[in-house]
Length: 303
Image 1 (cartoon, one colour):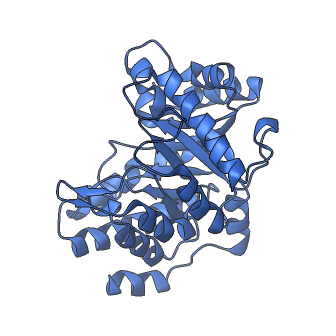
Image 2 (image 1 turned 180 degrees about the horizontal axis):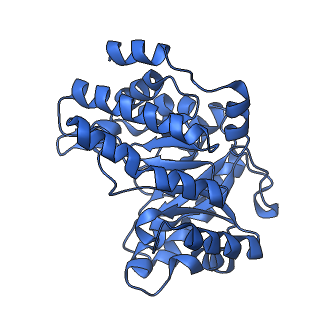
């Protein structure tokens, strides 16, 4: 980690102009329904993964479905549902969103290799595999791509490798005005103190995190404290993921306190998009999305 920090010191973190350009996309004006909130609401595509995997819903139709079904005007994509990363396909998706005035927020990137890979050739290939998604995000007008910082090795080894990869990828993304953000997504990345250290050691202004309300399970035997984790990650956040599963009769999430979490988010000065990511099984995906939206608005307005 010390070596990574020293290396970062010798690399430009990006000009002030680049930083302003990239992060101007993060602060947004809430819609009419959300005008009493300190954040705006987007929908994470994974919330509809069953419909998308099942062929009931196509990626190109996701923005229109989001607006018409849930009255949500901003979307977060998952690269697994893209038919292609070719520019013609991305531009068709952009046209669809422009036609209906839906904002493209970010692309969640999976299955492109581990950024914490130990083997150098594989590590560099993983970094390069993400380039096309940076370009896609740029075309769509997104502010970020979400990546994973996994790898097979010790805590220190993965941290060193992930730091190098994130720095290299962020340098590439800076030229496109795109942030590279890491989600707490299992393994070491779900240990918030570890992830925050990795991000800071990149030395890049466009490298941050996407704190997820529900992904603080490090291993089968270790769960990182959700509220501590949110405190540690929010100063580096360029987006937030509101993970939900089950709700009680009053509409509150049964496993986590949305009111307490949103207070942490607000106190950190966050004023961007919070993406709904429903993963429950008791409600349909549509019902779960609407329940999460209702709770976000209720809790957000109370803070």
